[in-house]
Image (cartoon, one colour):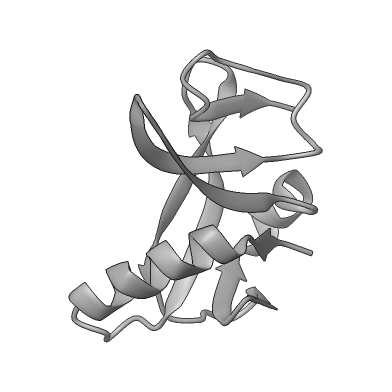
Length: 106
């Protein structure tokens, strides 16, 4: 299961309103790269064959078969602090990561 917090859902909803709307779902994937082995990729997309769908706080999330095991249990949050605002991805499958939080090892 993949979930988004209320804060993340609110930000995603605002971003989707500004987007053209042809791709209604939030796609999250883990791709090779980054300084720790895998990096996260997020964007709006349509469902493809083999995708798994999750609904959380009004957001439909699609995940491809290859990323599913690396992202199972992922929580997407959106945090605002003095340094700025950003998504924070809490991944229970990550065994390590880099300082920027955009890549992980498994």
